[in-house]
Length: 275
Ligand code: C2E
Ligand code: CA
Ligand code: CA
Ligand code: CA
Image (cartoon, rainbow, N blue to C red; front, side):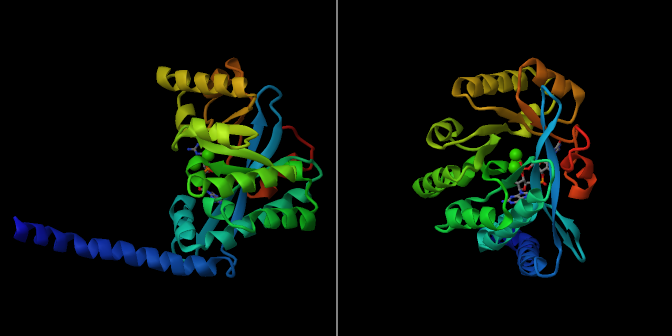
């Protein structure tokens, strides 16, 4: 059995080695990506369900690797977080997004994903203050999106930083609600302005009794806590119809618009068109 074990270990070794090598290569390339102009931001509209108006955009990072093509954030963000590169990337994202939003004649909001690593940094609040000052963006137009898992490391520093950022006038959203740990206690401990329900609960909500029950419960929770709910990943009119009937405040998803280069939404940011 021992021999067999060693044999199967050897069998998998080359594959594991290749994975580690591939990760190192990606990490190396990611370090150069910013300087080599391979990173870009895309913007996805967030819509008020009652008025059908775009109220703002979420900013999402894109990496086009010269040989691999598009590398998904789900692949490179964790590498960036483990290596600390996320500090540099995250700061570039926030500064670029705020600069972009400050140039819009339509004063829509801009939602930026903030990693745990950034949130726990001692200079996080100073950084956000500096970005607002240098870009001239009204603080209330900036929203930072935090995932539940992002908050559990040094909870006191995270809460303190969030409170200070809120004191600047910045909004804070809980991202991916329902997928992490201890969502309910986090709701009480952190000063959120709204909740984004994870797309896994919205998928076919009109057709799935369990999803429907969960989404209704989250909407009730939002009502009780006086927190607006945004439904993520709305792809179909039936899902939107369900959300409208259940009085969900806002939504985001392919049904309204994909994450795109901001130029695609030129008429929205200039205020010439509603959706
Ligand atoms: P997220 O913050 O939950 O972002 C929403 C993800 O859902 C995005 O994936 C978006 O493209 C996708 N999405 C939006 N609408 C729909 C829909 O109707 N259907 C489906 N199937 N998907 C939809 P993306 O861009 O691949 O980003 C994945 C994750 O990577 C994000 O999840 C976020 O956690 C992270 N991420 C992306 N950009 C940044 C960034 O600048 N900083 C940090 N820290 N994380 C980022
Ligand atoms: Ca997000
Ligand atoms: Ca999300
Ligand atoms: Ca997510």
